[in-house]
Length: 352
Image 1 (cartoon, helix red, strand yellow):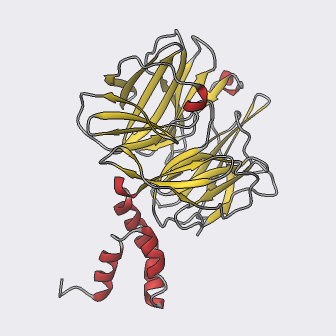
Image 2 (cartoon, rainbow, N blue to C red):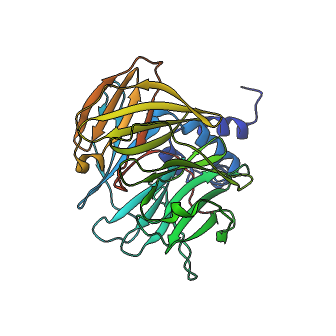
Image 3 (cartoon, helix red, strand yellow):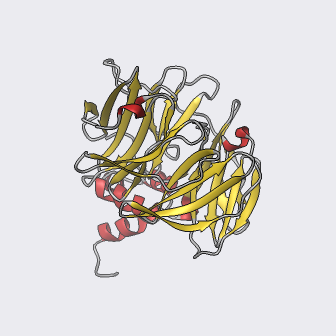
């Protein structure tokens, strides 16, 4: 260590400190400010921040917005910190659409505007433009947030308007939108199909497309972020006796899905994607019905062989699982209840 330049030592140390401490360190001197603002520093700090101890739960209700740490030892939330949004809103009417590396893609429901927002640094960027890009309509649109090989954060916005599909891509690097070709089946443009938010994993954005009635069609749409090509793969086989939901999550760069179905009892399978096929990892015992209002607010939490279903009020129930331990939080929404998110505290900026 004594033979290393001071610049390298500072770099190695500060890429390992919490995101909020990096912000304070920028005020030490001009040299530190310049170092901590470089793309290399932000990228490496982000990669070292993607650990469970840096995960936070963001919860929004009509009166407050709060952030809670996650206590793995007790499988619960820590004390909440109340904060205010840094952008104008009406009665906390903010929908969280997608999240990646500490950035949230949100919609201001009173204006339909899309924003990129880092709740740790409070920085945000409006994505709406005078030529009607960056405006989101609930129940018709879908978005996916990803980062490409050049470290450019991008937002894929899928619009369905009167049976016509429009797909646009925002680049943080160039701060602009462009139209891209996106070929999919005509029936998926119907409002009877529910498109999930995109889940980024292994260079691909994945969307579930589920028909909103019993026995309907369920598929997975894959968008390759490098070639910008689209393909369709099958949905895991599920009984057709109840409503179907597929919740996608990236676990250590492997795509998993919690596929749930049922009405009076809910059956849930955990599957992982290998190639274009879904391999069952486990099936949980049938669980009692959960009210729709609770499904809009819950977060699933898997760690140390148990699966916890959490609400704003705390743990709802526990399912024991016979599997290798891993730690992963992910948000679950039912018919677009975007009132919470799990994010990692980073210094990734929503703008260049």
